[in-house]
Image (cartoon, rainbow, N blue to C red; front, side):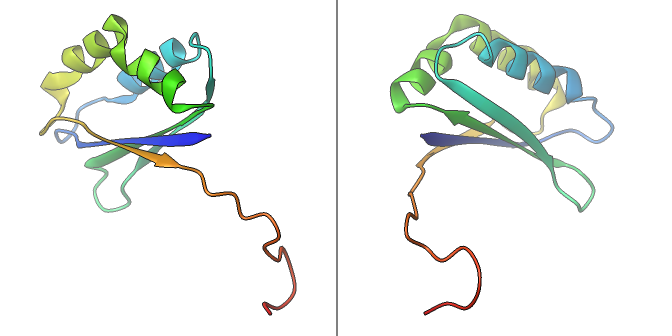
Length: 104
């Protein structure tokens, strides 16, 4: 599984929630989509991070290359102070890691 973080600064008082809902709704139609969370900074709420979970890098690339995803982000440009930044991370399984009690 991979996690994709997309972050940006939004303009003050801009309503970004419809954009986040569109991105999630569209991503849900793609094979390999596992979920998405939207995070807002605690200090003023100007920083938004979307965390997408995908089954594989190929699934993510298919979504990223889609015209609809590009159009949604392009349409949102007027609400943003900067271009969205994307980072992709592999999930590192921690099998065998203690789940309770004290560490060795």
